[in-house]
Image (cartoon, rainbow, N blue to C red; front, side, top):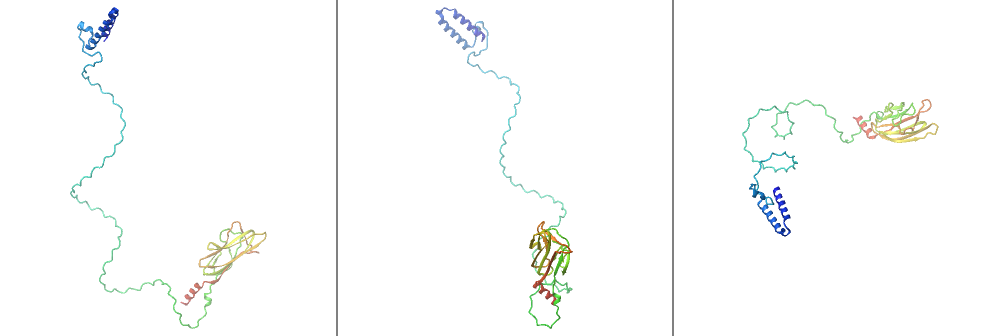
Length: 314
């Protein structure tokens, strides 16, 4: 390629030395020579000196492809690619055909006896069997419980006059009690510990409660002396106030009172109680002032009295 450039330079120099009249003919000669050199692919000097060069295209015409070279060394491994998205689960395969029944295995050893199961339901009654021979008469059993009371029978004929026993069925219940201390605790039964009268023993001086033993109509009353404070007191029946009274202290001693009538059943309880805090002016002085709580049975429940009369006749 360097020689070709030198030839072009020589030709250009000769073209400059030619007279102006001969310039067009030299220019045409220069173009034909350049075309021949490009077409043959051999430098001009090689034709004169006899040098041999490999045939190749100098201009834009490509030559024949050469032989393949030796394979090069393996390159470094490239970085791992990203993990792809998991594929979808494949479809379930078809159910296989049922295999042939195998030979029965050897019988194993008998295991331990298990625990007894729960008792089953009672089975249906079987057919009645033949009647057996009569057994020996047994001993008399114990007396059974008393049955319900039967209906009242017809009235019998009048009997002979008997002895009067009216006093034996008269039922009594009455009490009157006082207190020896002033200003008892509020919202609790007031304990009247001074017993003046206690017919039947139905009043309990240890807790201040009257406990009914005979059903019937009762009358209760109280007369309470108060001093220095107001008094808010009430009569309680089985935990509920039946009556309440309030007396204001005017600077002198005063008396608060109350009374009522009520029906009581056995085990009913009655007592007095201060129902308001700091309104506790109950006063007692054994030498000159008392505070009293009283009650008594007016008449007995007629049904209860009839049942007692029937028992006496028996």
